Length: 516
Image 1 (cartoon, rainbow, N blue to C red):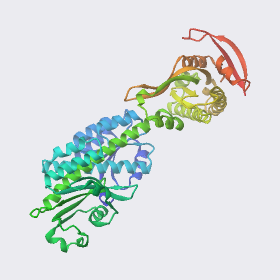
Image 2 (cartoon, rainbow, N blue to C red; image 1 turned 45 degrees about the horizontal axis):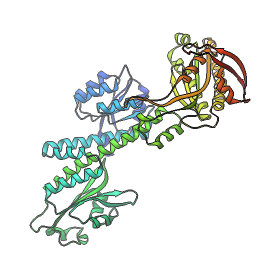
Image 3 (cartoon, rainbow, N blue to C red; image 1 turned 90 degrees about the vertical axis):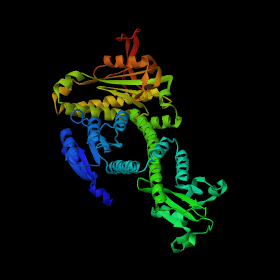
Image 4 (cartoon, rainbow, N blue to C red; image 1 turned 120 degrees about the vertical axis):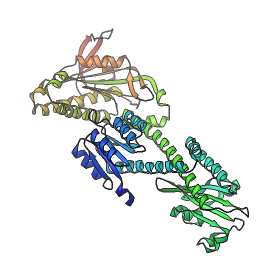
């Protein structure tokens, strides 16, 4: 941590409190506060910094655009984007312009430190790799390692390069197995496969175990082996020279590269040690990038699910299917609940946007709570309206009854919410809510592109629910004939007759839900 105390980082945000919170979460960073884009650019022109922490605040601060400009000023600059709306689209955009990660606001200390440490670790690896490429023409080896599609492939290519450069008789890579808590040979040259599979070393045991534990390389030649602290461990007299070199990712030892020479006239030197440092560094970059890509794939999949489907059981259900997200969808019966705040346009024109946001957040909060309480799924928020689904994708025995109970609970809580806000302003006296519940065959699944998916419900029943809700006034709940039949005598209802709905060809027989 000591070296990190001198790490200079630009922090760009116009919010003073937010800046204080971020700086407090990262006390080991030397933070240079920049309240706007221009001051961030001037700072990067005036002095060297390693890291840019940019709070995405469009239109005042365009996080992705600003980082591109700062990267042009200081190539290789590490970056972390901070945003209160860290969705999948923003994540992809951030990664495309070179950010190492995204931190959600309000800032959480553990997450912020983890993402920033990873960004700086990657920065150090990239800087080291850049320096090495300017000194020794081994960049093609690095490119080959980076192009590998699996860890096994990376290690195989690493050993191929090591054998070509050092002419070693034997070489092997050992990685630490978390499950077995020991070092195991993953890939080897010049070693019998059965012997390789049998080797297990604890950290600290033998030379390789010591190198793994201490993170320091060991070079031994036959002439000076007797002077070494490892002389009691040298049990293979046929070996005339050997090097054990640690493999590290993000300052963490993950394994050991071992090479040995049996030719009488051959010896390894410090130059070979330096060569291994280069190759191991490139392999570490490739491994770190591969693991980052794999983690990004997993994280993106998880984030996509959890951001598109608020209900945890929906995410678990879809993750368990392990399916192609673009192909995910089915046609099946479902119950649809649509709620629409009435007179919202007038409300927007008469109150400030912060109050409007607070009112909507309270409404959406309890709407989601009630939907989840009856095991439904919130499909989407649409400005002043909300759509929920019951019976799919999470199966319910009585989805119409669950939706009816949800509608009654939402009606009750909306009435209380309106009464509270009326105490602040009489404008809220005219705010109303219309709710409708329908049931029928719908398509439920992903719609969109590989860059942005929307898991949603589509079908005539959705249109009917939306149109029927617009007919409901005074916080009434309208239901269709099918829903009426399925809820039985659980609720009192009032028949409304057949209603003609805009955009719907046939008239809809509707009922008003009274109480249960």
